[in-house]
Image (cartoon, rainbow, N blue to C red; front, side, top):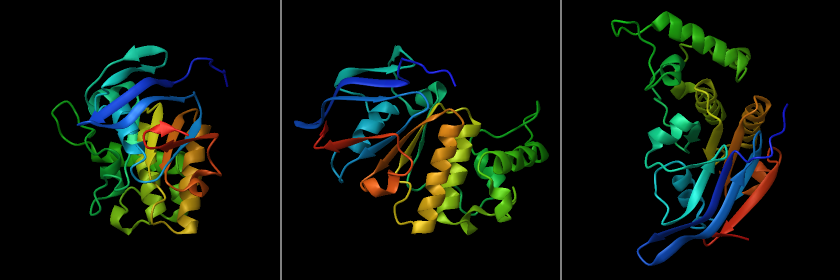
Length: 228
């Protein structure tokens, strides 16, 4: 794989205030191409705020953001997605009572020229994703499997697969192993490794370095809004 000197993401001298409180203080943060970065810190360390700035939820009060070498300004999650930045939150934003294929294409439904849902095409594409991206067919899962019956690790896998399918360049995982068993945590780490194998980058947010240690290329530790 070609090695690129430029970073995929660079956040330079980022500061964010809520009232008079500096939640992020002149922070520099970067992610390389095909790199997994563990973003570590206790609750209130500034992890979520930093990522919300990167994903368009918050606007920084100071600093610049570069993506693929170009300075970017955006003020919405939708724009961040257009650039190729996807976030998988703790709750995963999945429809628990819906089938896998509906979750994969939620908000991006396959329709024909008349606007009718292309169910067969969506199911066929979902089956391909299950097999090639996350290897779920071996677990007996199908496009019609109900999400609510999946394990916590499998649900994370579905959300990651969805991001990969829609060409995300950077996948951000927000505490993906919280409340998961050891075996389910291992599943999530395998999915993270799959992200890297596909040439993409990942930010793994956690308060527990041991959860991300097997998969991360390096770690960034935040405390009170600054790297330590």
